[in-house]
View 1 (cartoon, helix red, strand yellow):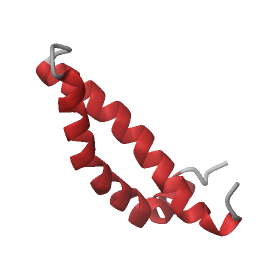
View 2 (tube, one colour):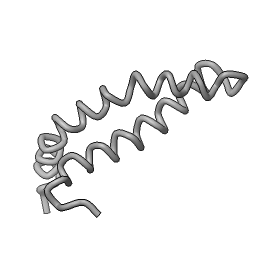
View 3 (cartoon, rainbow, N blue to C red):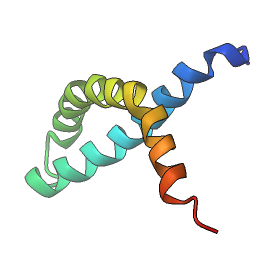
View 4 (cartoon, rainbow, N blue to C red):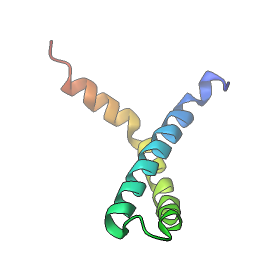
Length: 75
């Protein structure tokens, strides 16, 4: 297990891996089908999308959490 101080990096990392894995697989399948070469096309899409998603989630997660708390603050 990692020390708690790594949570601000590990949480966005895991969220971005999960999100990008599912999104690139679905979008690649919809756009090109599950034909020969699907896995390679999916891997290429993942390689492009993951750094972008990780950066966005890492930089915006606290702001998004604050916005969600504000939106859901009504009893």
